[in-house]
Image (cartoon, rainbow, N blue to C red; front, side, top):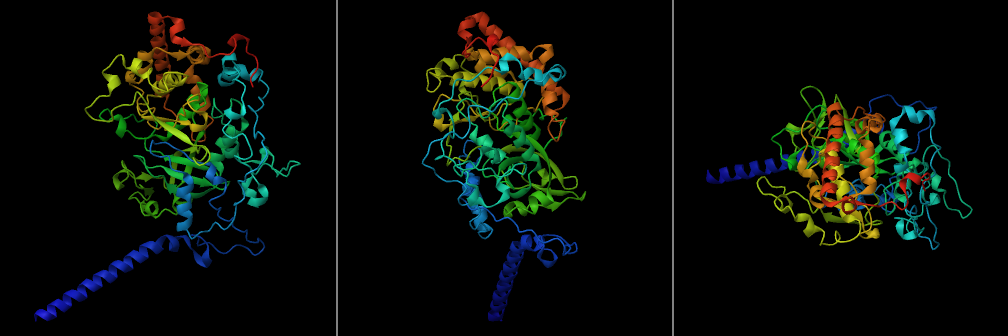
Length: 558
């Protein structure tokens, strides 16, 4: 009897094991089965196409040596991982579909040549339209036409062919070019810059002083690409507290997608700590436009897009962990939640209407393998603790200690921190723990304003602690100070300029009207803080003259 029970128990264990194995195999096969409809077409039960239309050959998946290695986006301090490694892993998981497509797209050359001049030609100034459009009039103001110092080879992020050269013969795919341009060859057999994808033009234009020039036509074209290019691949971004997706486009550009989590009218709940606040997609979009209006040009291009969660995320992802989190809600809406530290659960799922969802798409910066970036701890970083305070919150002389510490003891870095402080205060962004710079330019370069999703959370409250660096150091660039004074005038009112600029976005309106009004209020607070510093320390000790010439005589731009 005892032996019989032992045998039955063993059989039961074996059956459970077989059932578990069967379920595991079925779960792995589900994504492939769902994507294959009748006659092998992906997820489509429609009749076969007419014989008169010959099937178009699908583009080959690019190899890891394609132009995709030019890109990466670093929103977190621990994100200095190349997007190449993430995408290569996804390609291997998909069966190595990248046989040769663009292996020769990036090639070394022995000859030195600038890929782009110091700046793109500026369009002719508008006449009557300038008076009707405050934004156009602002960009024609002398403060927005001051020239940068002359750019030497060392001031360009990519300045020789040995850094990048696009070889169209190796790609053999029309998708490498913009659809609006035909392939153009120089007498040397190289490709004209005009035929490069817009994301590559953006990368080539980066220099020591700016991410992009004021009138670079590639930026507007890139913003259009972010909302119109076909999405060919989606993967979750590793690291970070909240869900972000890496989207790859048909022209091999990439962008970071942050989905909508709050409506325009919602404020951050008063009991939320700054480090557990939602990351808002519209804040990323608004931050790009604010950065441009302030003439910093340190935020990568960001655009809003309405994404089909079924066709443009679920059906193209090769990330099984992401795919498994999709479900249909009781209201028959498509939802998913992914994997992350905060708000990645069924209770915090992202649901479409029924499968459409808003989000922001931020263009990637050049890949770290080609343009290394250095991550710096913000001296005025918050404690990120429920009870503890940071040193700067309890020491009023904290700035004196910072100014004796490299790289803040020389150069312009302390002034860059002040610019970033003003930028964050206008948005209400308390989450500036680290920042990044391009390693090639050393300490004499600008700060990249990345990861602005926690801005524009409260329009009814001005967080004065964000302004502490300015209040403690009492330093500001003259160019920044004059532009802030200009934006406080009625004819160049910041809220009106932001509203006009944001209307260009595809998912406008981007900001709730009280947020726009809050920026005007905060701007007056910033100017009052600078005025108090000048009264205390004197104008010359507070305002740093960064103009090479008298701004009133500036009539041309590079």
